[in-house]
Length: 201
Image 1: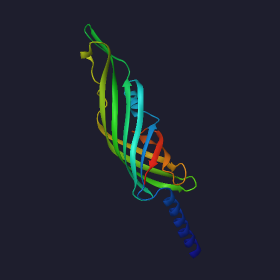
Image 2: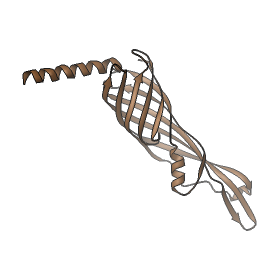
Image 3: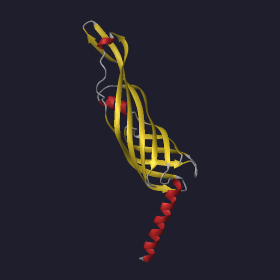
Image 4: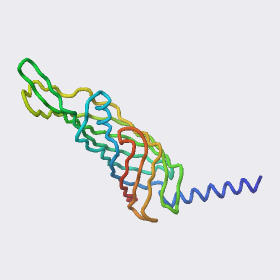
């Protein structure tokens, strides 16, 4: 029993030392990436409106290691899409138009690292982010009487979130400040997102 306890303590100390060599308490990093699915387009489709000219989500952020395991961050996400062509008639007047929808999201993020590899210089983590998003809808009149066009009102400002089921963050080589990240999850950043990160402390 004593040997088992000693072995467990040695293993725990070894794992902690590996964690400290990849990312340590006090490390700060910035990151930028792109998501694979546009949540605005998905929302438009869910209410029966076709979406086109999708852009993003594009993601930038800042992250601070509170401990070797806990990471606190701020994330900004931008994405846009256009509705399909819409036509409104009033008597002899008619207008055809699209609505360009732009959404900006600010999130506070908390991640927990649950696996570390010194050999691969990376960590695996999960986390949650919560914040607010703002919607800006602009009319793009294609033809006709623009006074008949109505702004798209199904998307409004609200609460935004993102859940990271599994994330990867690593350095390109030991002690390198430059690295990459990738995440699988659900929310404003899309089902999958990937990018580069730079650790400057």
